[in-house]
Image 1 (tube, rainbow, N blue to C red):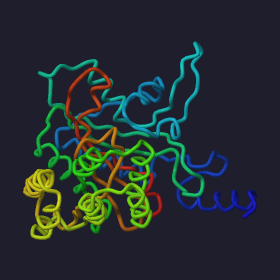
Image 2: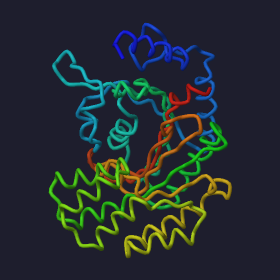
Image 3: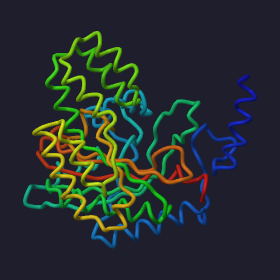
Length: 337
């Protein structure tokens, strides 16, 4: 398609979804009574009812604050620019990292736990053909200072509550990265091989994984575990199948099983119906430590909620604070508000 026609089509789609002609691709101009503004206010009130206090991360930070936070795609996806003194700055790429910096600087272990939330825009570069917004209105929560499953259950339950307000047919997909990390650690892989395997899991590409593992010559048991992990999907309600699925992963599987069953007990019966376990769902290994989650609604082609537990993040700022949270990307709801 010629560039001029593609741009025209983009503008037509943008107008239909809340974007404004004359603005750069992926940004929007909202009116005070826009549905997304009203929805955001309702969801903020819901979060505050759980005892969470709002914080306001700065619109831009030093680039190194984000680069040192553990995420691997900062250089590719953040908007950066130079300050007058030559310092490299970055437009707000996410909320969790600047909150972690602030908490690490201002709070001591005896001040914890903290229940914080944020509501505002983040800015991320996106591949053009995906049609994703580059200005993303987010609402998110951070529970800092508790490492137990009760904290994970609290934030997962809140995610269910807010997703149900968007769509009563929502789906929350939960994973636990510990089994995947343990398997990769046990293998003597080169950095290239490790990245190739990780890419296969990100894309759920079983065919490519088979090709890669055939060249590596792994023990049959390990190969079986990797393939089984990629396919390990089951409803949270199905305890029998969940136990059977995790037997293959021995000690690490027992740990994750106990965790998931404890998490299930915290959720209501109605919430459990909407939760799917996917142990082959992997994210950034340098960021998440155990729980990971993605939330879906029926009229969005992308996950509208994402998060998990990131106990190692605060080490980048000199503290050892466990933390768990998620972000709800409200900009992805333009299509059906």
